[in-house]
Length: 213
Image 1 (cartoon, rainbow, N blue to C red):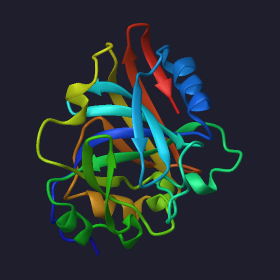
Image 2 (tube, rainbow, N blue to C red; image 1 turned 135 degrees about the vertical axis):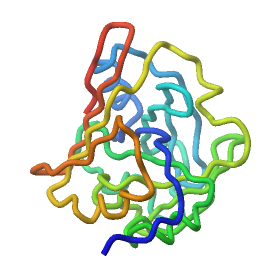
Image 3 (cartoon, rainbow, N blue to C red; image 1 turned 90 degrees about the vertical axis):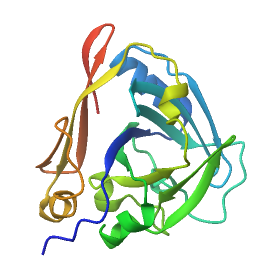
């Protein structure tokens, strides 16, 4: 049965996970030809990031465990505690809503409960499962609700990069599409059947169109 639509979702950002920021930044620079600007630290999660604007209300994030931060009292988000020896990769996509509680009421249970986190002076709410896992291994989006005000991408420098398309593959997309059909629509995003979970982004750059995986 298709879940009842309760909240509109908008593509917000893409996340590359890595064992360290250096590895993640090298992965993005090799793919896109850009040195990503610094972001900040997430004290509640013991992580830190770099950020790249991809257009109005849209950005790319590289996130990793911060070795200088104390271990959090809970599992870290984006499944970072179980990353192991995995190479840096585009792990998930994040969508925003104005009402996270309503959005979660119509989302799969795997989306996780809402928590509040921060980076420097910025505070927001985001859905994170108790075990830190990614819903449908990253094929279903993480849902976020920013605090009122300008979107964080508006404060990032425009370096000439923009998202063209995002392909999300999963062996069984029926449930994922059922939860998204009435809540999310973006012609750039295609959720398709694939042999394994894989995200592929086509990005316009000053060097031509590049692919990030």
